[in-house]
Image (cartoon, rainbow, N blue to C red; front, side):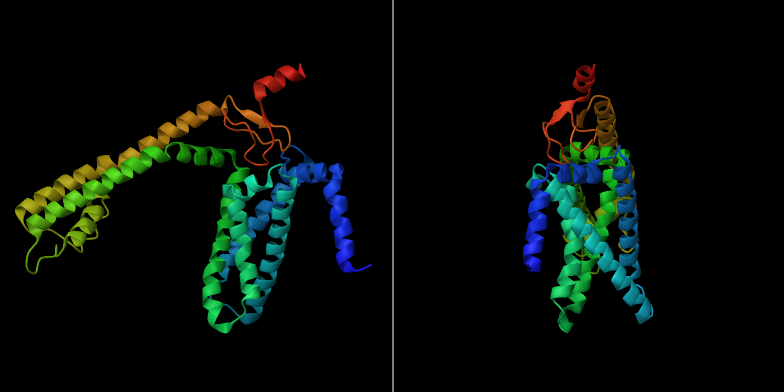
Length: 293
C-alpha cells in the first residue's frame, strides 16, 4: 500500500470519526479543560517566540546562528499550519473562520515562509524577506486569549463609524487651515510654498507635534498658529471620548452575553446567533442556567 493510500485511510478515519473531532475541538477551542489550557499556553509561547525570531532576523548575526533561527522558524510554521488546519476541521463553518480576522492573520503568518521555500531565485530574496515580516501578525492572535483585549477590539469596531466621520472632519479642517495659511504666508521664497506644504504644517501643528521645519513669520500667521495649537488639544480629545464611550458600552454588554456550547468561548455579542470562533449555534447564559436547573 502506497503512502498516498495510507494518508487517505487516516484522513477518512479522522473525518468520519465524531470522537476524534470532538476531542480535537476540546483541545483547540476548549478553555476550561486541562488539554485546552495546555494547548493555549503552548500556542502563546510559540507566538511570542516566533515574533521574537522575526525581529532577530533583521539584526546582523553569525551565519550558524541565523541557520538555527531558520530551523526554528520552520518548526513554528509547521505547528501553526497544523493548528490552522485543525481549526478549519473543528469549525462547523470552516469558511467563516477562514475569512474571520484571526483566520486571515493565521494564513498571512504562515504563507511567507512557504513562499520563500517555493521561490528560491536569488533576485527575489529581498522581496521574500519583506513578505516574511508579515509573520509578526501572529502577535495579534494573543487577543484571542485576553478577554480585555477582545473587549477593546469590539469597542474599536463599535466606534469605528464615528471615528471615520471625525477623521473626515479633521481632513476638511486641515485642508481649510492649510489653504488659509497659504494665502496669509504664501509668496516668493516663503516656507509655505504650496497648499500641500501648508496642509502638512496644519497637520503637524494641529496634532501638537511641532517639528518646526515650517514656521509662520507674519503677525497674522502667528496669531492663526496660536489658534490652531489651542484647537489641537480639543480635537485630540474627541477620539478618546469616542473610544471611552464604546468601551463603557462593551462593559455593560459583557454582563449579559452568550456562551458557545461547542468551544466554550464566552463574551459573544448579545445579538449574535452563531459563535464567531467556531460557527456553532449560540444560547443565552441565562437560558443555559435555567436549562441546567
